[in-house]
Each structure stands twice: as structure tokens, then as C-alpha cells.
Length: 402
Image 1 (cartoon, helix red, strand yellow):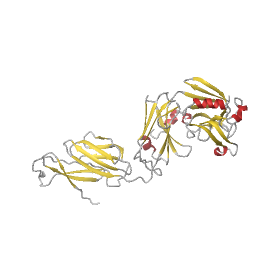
Image 2 (spheres, helix red, strand yellow):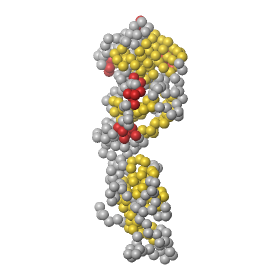
Image 3 (cartoon, one colour):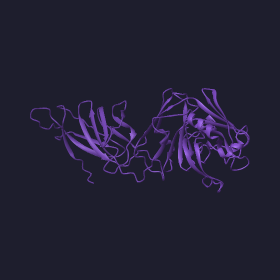
Image 4 (cartoon, one colour):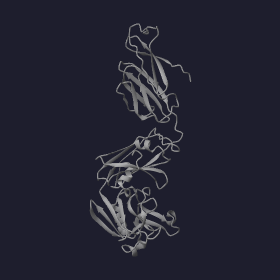
């Protein structure tokens, strides 16, 4: 590429000699302009050395394959900037701020991969100039999945959960790009963990259960964020919104073999059930699990949860509580044990009628608070939504920004 800068003509006030520069960490993309006389003749104004005054612009990103992931910086050599616009090929311009001395403009966000940008700037004296650059394509692209779904209504224990396709080494950079807002300034924190699938995951949970009616928005401004080695770049933004429904809690007494639904602090349902057989892998989990999905009638096979060929059944009113396969569901084959003993393969089994009644009342995001000695341990953070089994202080410590 030639080091010579192209000459461009522009109009400027008569007698003006200004140096207008968009600068960066090196001598980068540049365009030289000739200041012209405002007189009728249109002849070029010349300085004392007989040459037209040179006004140059540079950008801290240059050419057709500039490195993405850096803010765009625009600096004026003399005078003060009035406005700067940095527009990608698609979408609106990057927001940014002019420094207190009027010399430098810096974008709030970084340049994204595989994007062409046009820079336009004006100074306080009415001069203007333009430059262009493009960023290199991402060698690897990272993507994510979000829960809960957009415009849904969920229970008071539902966290915001983000699972990434590829590893995230630059956790702080990613977390900074995740903006959570609520209608009532709910206190909460991000916490990084490993999903049951083995993938990197970050959840945002409030300090305490959500207040009913809270509106929650996630604005994930990730376009242009590098997730690090083996992770790749984000090449788009993400967003989701959801609303918190009624204050419902399902309380499970494993040792007493009963399950009760509480709404707004009042018990509205009390059901006999049979949980997992104690003393081994068939035992149920204790702690707080969050209802992940209402799956209706599904095929349950013991081999998928490491229990050999113990069962292969079509099961009605299935309510998933963990990724490892713990559900609440109808289990009419276990009727002799409801309210009497725990004899299931780990799930919370009820009669058809009671399972149907519970299924009709609970909402995804409702907490199941399970207590009792007849368990095999506490629900892990990544096994569904087990963040409520971590103290608030310990959860805050899982943020990459603490």
C-alpha cells in the first residue's frame, strides 16, 4: 500500500489555516485536504511558504482488515471537534463522546469483526472530513442461548441464564457487555459456572426471589467482543425481556412424603407423593431446584440417567427440575407408596389427578424447595438452576467483575 495520502478538496472559511486530524496510536488511515478561499475567484489560499495549508485525518483503525475489538478514536490536531459520526455498513452509528478539551472522540463500543465503517467529522469552524476502514472477518464465531424466552412470564426463582457455544476466557469483557435492567431496581449479580452440558455459562440471579410483577430486560451488547482463545468473536447483539408472575413456592418434604404449593405465602395445595429411594443413586436431590419446563407426556428411560434398564415408560404431566433427570410427574404405578415411603427412581411421583392439578398451577421459574435426610445431596448450580443453593456472598464472588 502506498504511504502517500490522497488529496481531497473542500470549502472552508477564507483565511482559515487549520489542521484537522483523526489520530490513533500510529500514523494510520489518512486523507489530506486543501483549504480553499471563500472568494469569488475560488483560488486556493496559500501560506507564507507559498503552499496550501494541509489538513489531514487519521483513524486508529486502517485499511480493509483492521483488527476488531478496539474503540474507534478520532483526534483533532488543532481546534475543537463539533461532531463525529462512525457508521457501520448496517445499523445505526456508534455512540461516543468528545473529550473535555474538544480534541478527541472515542466510541463507547468496540469495532465489530467483518464490518466496514465510514467516519465523518466536523470541527467548530465548520470544516468537515471523511475516512473509511473495514475490520477483518472473525476467524471463529461464538454464539449463545438465552433463558428465559423473550416476552415470557416466569416464576420468582427464574434466573437470567446465558450458555455459550464455545469457551469464554475473557469473562470480564463479556460480563461488562451484559446489561440487566429491572422495573424496580432489583439487586442482583452475575455468576459464572459450568453448565451441566460442560459449556461455560453465566447466570444473573437476584439477591432474593423476584418480586411479582417485576419486568426484566437483558441487553447483551456483545457484537465485537472477543471471548478469548478457542472461543471466538461475537458478531451480533442479543436481547430478551420477561416478567415475573405470582409468588409461588412448591415445598417438598422428602422424609414426610408430601408436596405442597404455596401462593403469596398461603398453602393452596397439599399432596401425598413418593420421592427417590434413599441410600443410592435413585435418591432425590435436596435443596432448591427451579421448574425448568413443563413437558407434558414424555418417554422416560432409565439408561439415559445411568440407571441401566430399570424403566422405560411414557410419563404424564412431566415437570423438569434438573438436567440430570429429576422431574415431578404422575406415577400411578407407585400408588401404594404415596405419602408412605420414597420408592421412585429419583423423581417426585404423584397420582394422575394430583399431578394434573399441580401441572395446571405451577409456572416455569417456580422454586421447588426440597428438604429431608432421604436425599443424595444438594442440587448443583449447573444442574438446572441451582444458584439458590449458594449463599449471596458466595454467588457475588462468582462474578468476573468482583
